Length: 267
Image (cartoon, rainbow, N blue to C red; front, top):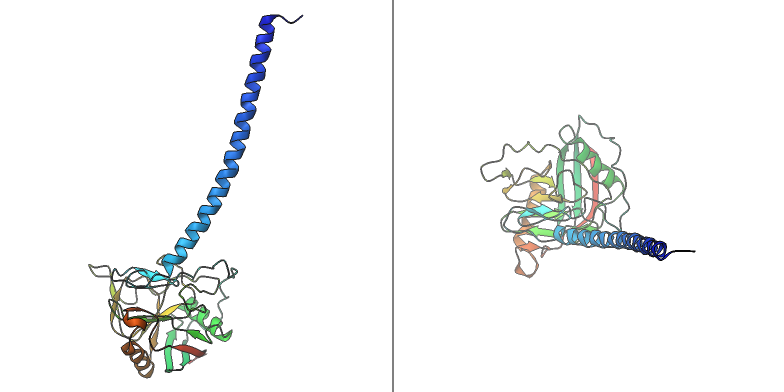
């Protein structure tokens, strides 16, 4: 026969077991909830990053956009793969690292040609040759012109909105080529310089690049890899002179610039 004391102890044990079961179930539910929240947060942050990357240039000399531009800096939000672009490996190095290459952009406004030194920026030159050979740039627009603070025309985005990229990133190169940064943290990118846009983080170059049409002060965090010839620089300067759509100082150029064909050849 079960005594009243034994019954009380049994009831207490059963109550304790029920409490433990409820705690375990609550723990599992919390874990599932946190997993869902974390996944949702990741999506939100990714979306926020894309929006930040596509912001227009301002006067704070910090990169915005996709290859991105935040403030007065050439940036891009997509040197890193986007959800719509499957990740792919950086192309295997195949250029002659001792040679000079020429990239020719045939546009509706005139030809823009610049030289690239593979000895100084081998992986950047290699990537551009790889993409040009695949006709990646053909039919793309130079989506961003900045006429105040910095003076650049940004191109290389297949989406045309600052968020496109090749699905891989390349490392920064030759960052000390323009000298040591001054007290304001910038160096001068001379007119005619071609440099990589990025997400404002190191080693996030993709396919977006910018053409400097007037001496511009920027942080030395953008790979300078090319020099535009005189005729090509005049083309870019004429586009800049026409201004930005809507009379803004940063945005789509009023004179649309479409790269009809891009080729890279060894000199």
